[in-house]
Length: 225
Image (tube, rainbow, N blue to C red; front, side, top):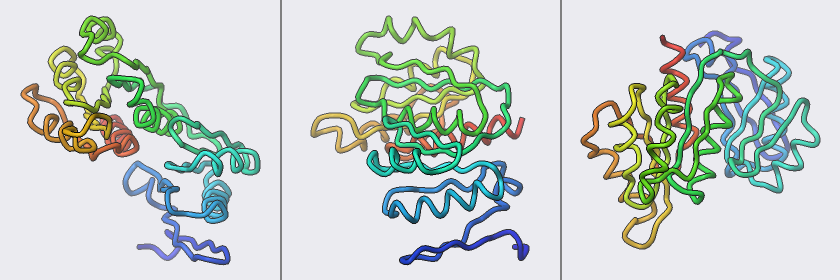
């Protein structure tokens, strides 16, 4: 690692090492995971990233912290559904990526993916509440999804939606199991196993509730093309 690839920032409770060269190495800048961090820690990290690159992004920022930080950080905005906080902007890519989810209960995960993609500079087509319980809804959005470079699909319960969409569209599908469902859903494990066992080819699967991870994979796919 070059000596200037990492910076340091501190508050009264913690010192962190920031990876400022990550975007150059991997095409994806370091993103702050807000869960478990204090508001002061998130603010200090975001300020340093923004000062050096004119951009900073954090996920899983609690609502009370996100609203407060959006009011004090430079060029900041906060999405309360996706819990994503951003400062500044990256250049627009002109690439369109779709994010779909089965039901309204899956929205926090879907919005985490959509907000991350938008912050990274991509155009996002969002189609929500299109689960297979009303398969006509799935079919009605297929043309819009098919026109995108990558499709992210979030679903809980039995996790069937990614398989159905992957059987209908040309772009690669990234499946995100969510922890939505009754007891035998096992907090998303049933959906995860269903997606891993999907018979439709062209599906990759990320961890339960990991909307950010799905967005990162989609970003890397389009950045490599």
